Length: 326
Image (cartoon, rainbow, N blue to C red; front, side, top):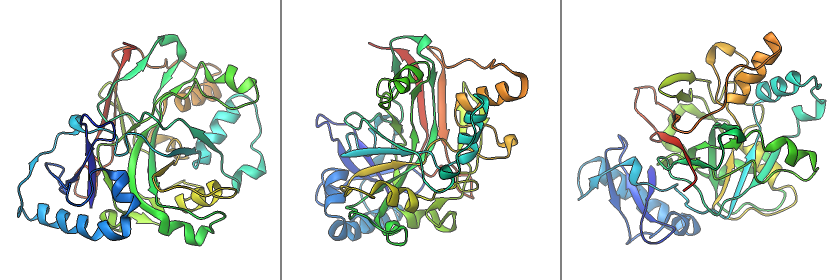
């Protein structure tokens, strides 16, 4: 099943069901007005949404054309946004570039930060920044949305709490982050609003590509219309989403509508390219001693998308342009 949120006068938008080819949509106010409302009553409304989805795919109902740029983030504001760093190839390269060893604990204890979730960006919303010199970077990721997760959930039981999967652009302002981290209290300004794919899908929609709470498909990243990376999101994922949920719930419950990101998708095979600029820069430092690839400038465009085995877009594309703050 594929779900989206259309922008509306209400800041939480309007829930729609989207067909498999991402060409048609149908509002379902008789089932749930918003995605958060649907998630809050998932056991009751999920069968109804599935029925609406099947009816839409069979062309048996009234519908409207689906336009990704009319979509807000699936959850325009979320109760919680947690982002991991599940790809150790990325972590190892970043640390190596600054001459730091890889602590053994990082192989079994995930990195994760808690970000702002009050203003999630739609797939076509601009990346706004006040200054190009802040080091504007994209981070292409996979994310999941959970229902209520109990305190201390086991890895085995965590997987059942994954209700939807989506793509993420976790925007970073790289030149602001070092000073924030130097304070010893995490970062805030270096992590502005993240953007999300126009569509979120249920795990069953992914077929065999969804295995062990990982999505085993390439994540395509185009920077200014040139292929920048196509790393396989499942290949080198050290920590599955079930493991990330288990980590997040060690000392707290997670509320329905929590979004957890994978962190920048990365492969050990460098021929697969990169999912963020900083990883290319650290590889340049490792290989030549200096980074030459610049960060994004005003007017730059980023596209993030994942295709199924038939070449069809699964989530729709994140397509953003960097612009000065209005």
